[in-house]
Image (cartoon, rainbow over all chains, first blue to last red; front, side, top):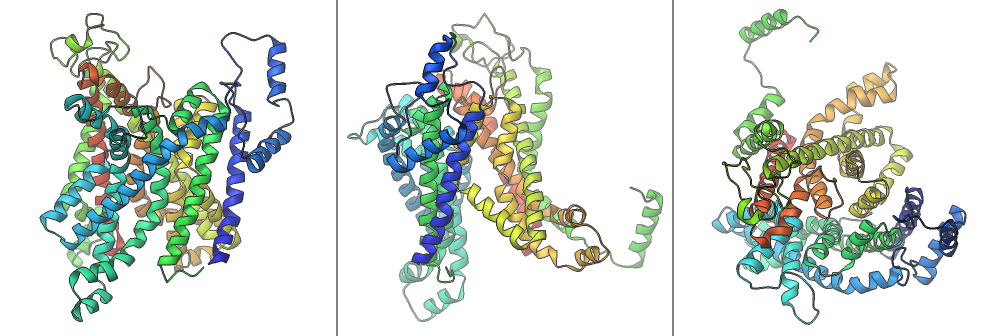
Length: 307
Length: 308
């Protein structure tokens, strides 16, 4: 198992380095720099600014410095637009927020999706099943950027139950709408995957054996059916994680929650390349790490996989 | 057709007389598809939405760029949908005709979806077929590359690309297409591996057909069923991606618009009571996604070899 993890890390680390180098070269190639202002600055000022940010060095040296600072000091450098703030500060300000509603959405999407799928499979072709299938088809066309306005419309504008935006760590009423908006469509996908794999497992031989020897139905489901039925769900968790991180951008924009998505969109609109790259690299690192965890989990649950 | 049609007809008539006609797998698939109510409903929806996108502009009284000064500043009271002043879907917040805007947004969104999926299909099919056919170390390296690219959060890279190289339509097409061929290449590679050792490929190789020609002429045509299914499922994903980016205000630029941008505008103004600005784009967005998902599922059921 340790060899397997090490082998995966041997792929993951070069991937991350590649992502850093790739985005750096992209940034270098981009037309217009962070100091292209509407009012043309005197050449001497531009030269000084470029010298300060090291933009006159040869490309390889810039890449090397950037990489070195990230790897050794975990320092993404200064923001290009807000000179008094570093990328680290901008990201650190938003990260706890994103993490809070992200984890909540992730967990609730899995718990609700799996329960819905299992229930639908157990009572296959009953009204429970039809409702579950209906929900999962409906939620498929309600991505986060559609759910967010609809939730605000109903829960804030019409009924005035919840605050329509903002964030507070101490007041969970601010958390509810971001979590629902982010989790709904993934909950639906997870429910659909769980349902079909559960149906397949329930028709297999070992379940028939377990039932034949008189095992109570709830134990058949929990002990024998759930674990193999979870395999397709686990392999879907990687993509869900990526999409949720991506979706957090919409949540931060629409609900003004102030997570890292906000930093990303602001920097995209300001052409603040340093922040954009910082967020992209951070998200890339998280994604790669998470995929590693999912792979290990998969290998651990599925006895057929040899690593 | 090279063959004379008359001859074909007489030949087929003769065949019918001679023996009971067998059903081809394609005919079977078509029948299954036509019997699938959800898929047919989806197809009808898609046709209607396409017709709306193509000829809707003819019925618009106002152009999509014109400001209606009579409703400007009092959009919430005067700008609601009405047949009298020609704003069938009302106006947007600046007094522009929402009907014309929705027609235009539908055109843009559908185009991004189809073109993006098209690029993804072409790149993915060629890449996957090449990797699968060549095999060996080349295959290893090519698929490892796909694995690596898959672990990158592509939406962020796409936005990075859009910001750096200007937010043009062609960049959007290219970015969306080039980033989403990965799944396609995996599926195609798997299918290619199973085709590779069949007799007709072996025959082609024995007669000295070059590898690239075998891939284009013999492998790719045999993959079309699978490719068609996944292409139908890719289009809504492309539309979702584009709408996502446009919702953030990073996609197509004014005066162009798309469903995502319109939904974003509508969502921004709904607390002034101008709900129609959200409702109309959202309606078209949702029914189109429904249509594509149903048609895609129907195609998959119809063409899936397991069903036969």
